Image (cartoon, rainbow, N blue to C red; front, top):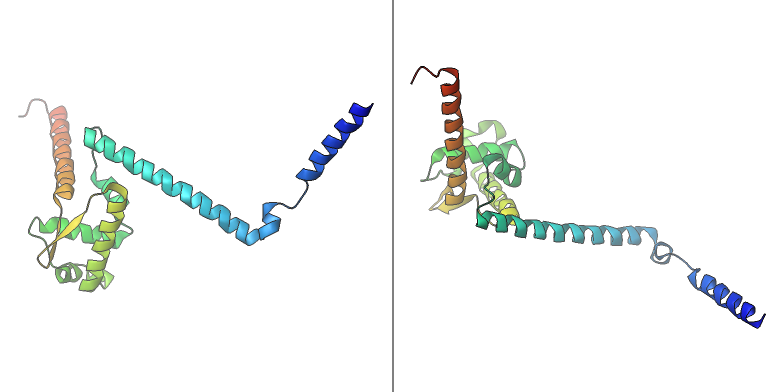
Length: 175
């Protein structure tokens, strides 16, 4: 009987120890939600770091190759960025002045410094994702890096190869 009373008192003590205010009630609902948000954002950042490590490992081993849509997804935010990137690509290895890009894209009402800032932001976004740069300065001009040209040329070779294969499939007698 004495053991039964001790056991009940221990269980009552355990129940009373669990009672109390939640963390949300202690620090406030808004601060608690901010704390949870910060915790989730930190975990997302850690996942992105791991993703970059895995991506760079696959790229280094030769199992992963970038393509143009992936680069555009990583670097470009909107249609203006895509148009700027296209202008820089068409300029070739010697590059293009920001004022020439702005003149070519009159419908967006860009100035030369807008073009430069957008290219720098594209570089920053791509660098965060892949560790590579998209464009580089050559004097006062902007040009695609060797990495970007390799991706574009590889894609063009694949397109030309596919077009050649489709042409052979449609007309096997003409060569």
